[in-house]
Image (cartoon, rainbow, N blue to C red; front, side, top):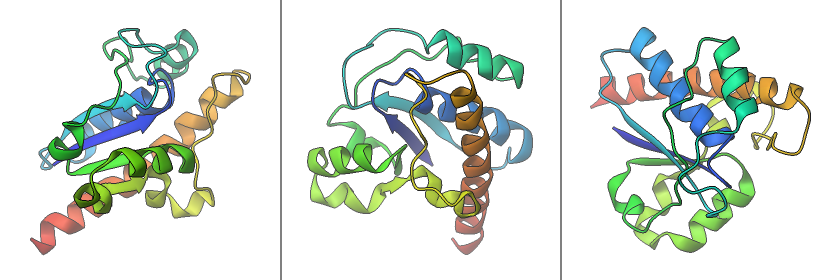
Length: 158
């Protein structure tokens, strides 16, 4: 299963989701064969590592966010990935406009997998205070566990 997380600049939310999913899946769902990546819809930060505040917040919870580098969503991503998870509704709309119609069923909001959160959007912490990065981690961890359960059920049904 190939999963792509997408936010705006690919330096806060989507690389956080990429690393959190990799880390938790390795520990809690090693039976799942996952390929995980992240990208942005805008080229503001291409080639840059995640925002320092993102890396610091992740490190406090044991996540190493040093490796990801920002990139933009490419047309080939719509063919390559089985599931493309938008971090908010605006990103989802952008992806729907860019994706071929055949890819639309694979475009989803990440927080669909954290219904208990009562939110649709992972808020962008870039212009907020440090608590925003912690909130992103809380939401991403919850949605990651929901996503892993969804993927396990899908494997059992197959």
